[in-house]
Image 1 (cartoon, rainbow, N blue to C red):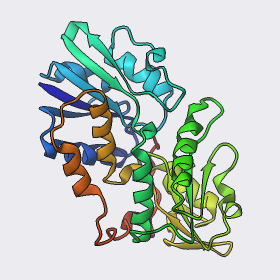
Image 2: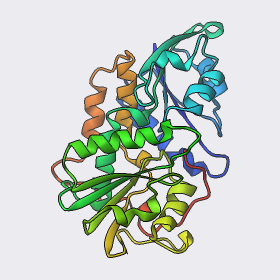
Image 3: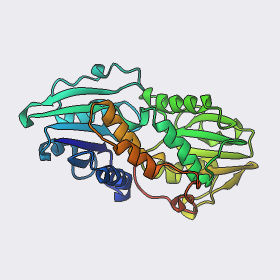
Image 4: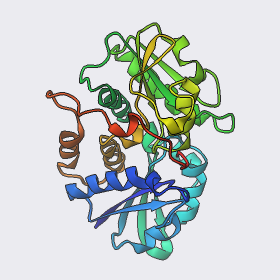
Length: 308
């Protein structure tokens, strides 16, 4: 038997923060690729510490639903799962290249394949682009449009910016958008100055966050000038300094993110059958065009939760 464990941050303040985790878990569960699919959280129940010992499967694939390699993926999750012999050096990563490490949980007699976070997997690039399609309602969005990929950024963890810069460069190399720029909340270049980095009339802004919360629903909209008060909401698009800003909200709410979870598990050796093809078929925009823009990001009020 094999199991998939999706390890996410969660929030004590607002249960909506875990909605993307449950949604993606349901999508994976429907494929039947795993005997068990289990969500687990740092700030909610079920907690990291108990999850391994509640599973019947002998082989377990743990995928962190986090953006960057760092404190949570290198310290908190392995410690709470009680992974024997874990050391971040086993990933042999430059900050964006962690794949998986196979470890034992001796007292539970389980083999755990501990995977890198979803945020640094190559397939996340496709999720960012699809998020731009979703918010604009344009399957072919790109020509004449700029794209800003926004991250938190912090001097305390250089890997926080690496994931954003990594995907920004990959999208830039595709030559699909007129310009692609990485921007940050807490370091330069800052999202406050978004219009200074683009000459295009239209700018799509995709925050590389797993869940909508304080940062994506309060800080970033106000910082960019979409609204003076997040509680009043904003239009999508909004006009700022003569540019139309298409603000997408957290990339982690895009259904295609379920594909990244499976990609991580597949890279670690999970047997998936046709699950990847099925998920891509069900969550990727087709020739009929992108689905309507996510209304939760149009005229929305902020939610008091913590982004992960």
